[in-house]
Image (cartoon, rainbow, N blue to C red; front, side, top):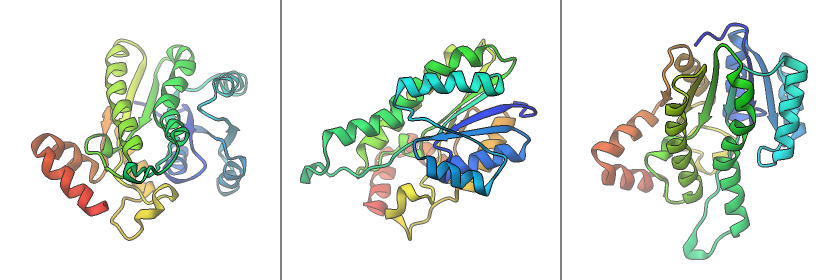
Length: 247
């Protein structure tokens, strides 16, 4: 994919992987809009990187999304690249009845339903572009679930399956469908794993850019490629090893 003169929207772009992706796209001359629910976080990101454009949006709210579509059409003539990065990671311990169902539903809405809803709303716009791309950020845990985060892992596995089907349908259109599947990455979202070996968000973003340019539709940075391979070769072994490490 040619990134020259493209306009990209990155959801959850105020920090972590999303902000690193936004900065990596900026470095390639892409006009970048970041969106999220936390206005203060977006404004802080813009202070650090004045080239960024910011828009408030809750990706679980259809009215917010439709307003965002209209705003980006008016301001930028639409977008060429949609990066569905927004996500949450929650631990759920069913043996202790830990957490409410509402919090689990919220995690599904953000991690699984949200990207599909964003694509539903932005796809008509993207189809009008000569070359467009959608990047769904799932996880290496889509291949091997981490048992302490069952909703997160199931949502990412569902997004992986959905993305494969969607990519097949888009094969003869101008819309290229990518999936970025990072391993555990050192961000605020997984603070509970401090001390464990994790990938840096800037390195994930660099791998994503390389994948976009090379039209590599499944991008598995770092240990995610090992999780993918081992899930096929020795699924029980890697499942036990992963959960022993982080359990």
